[in-house]
Image 1 (spheres, one colour):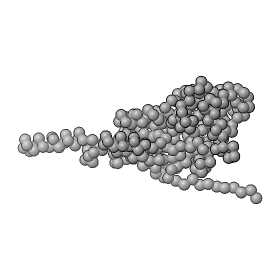
Image 2 (cartoon, rainbow, N blue to C red; image 1 turned 30 degrees about the vertical axis):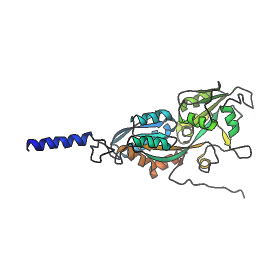
Image 3 (cartoon, rainbow, N blue to C red; image 1 turned 90 degrees about the vertical axis):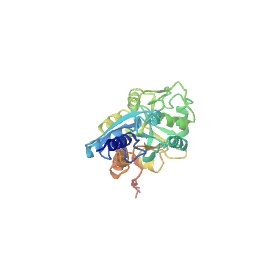
Image 4 (cartoon, rainbow, N blue to C red; image 1 turned 180 degrees about the vertical axis):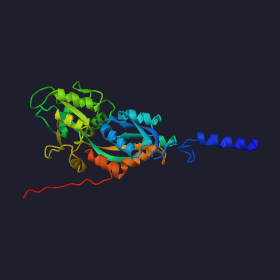
Length: 306
């Protein structure tokens, strides 16, 4: 090989190795849909679902390693912008402004709705107040109602973390941030559950996924120490608990979605995992976890009294 040929070869190899994988399909690739290593940032409300999903995925693809990093929703979005992960799991799609901002930086993203989740309202087992209209719930969350109707005991509202998906939902639901002294944050959904279990006057706000999988032994332990409230849209409506069927029909009003936002290359591991979650297997995991899958129909059975 001549000196000129060697120089050209080195330049070509250097170019291929230095090119961004999003911009050049010939760039060196260490991962595929079922092989490699990656990190995914996930809103902590969805931890139980994704612990199960990642375990199942890696069982099917033993050469793939996915490291879940559980963060608040706002922190996950910020980390996504900093390119600390190619995939995040949050409770909303990106806005048009966010997508335009990313596109201006030549970053193409794909958004996939994978499920419908809900906000669950939990209270201590001794509490007789377990039915709330949306207006009544809003009065409690904004500090207008500070004691329970049945006991006159002070209400202590607790949620997981500021800037979490649950917190963002409360801000949107109430119309503003809550500055009331009876509303405070701990550090996780699990801490909310444990606080409510030992505090008779508490009202907890959690992601449903933490208590929705009735086949999970941890969930059974959680449910033994709490009551799950039923919510009505108004006083003329029926009250519903957050079961998948009532979420599907939107009769339970405190629902939200689960979105996977991905900027990984089409042939890479990040995209492979997103495809897995939108596939029949992934959607079945979601359904068995007590949530509503986005791509599979929910079977509704109506019983009639004779």
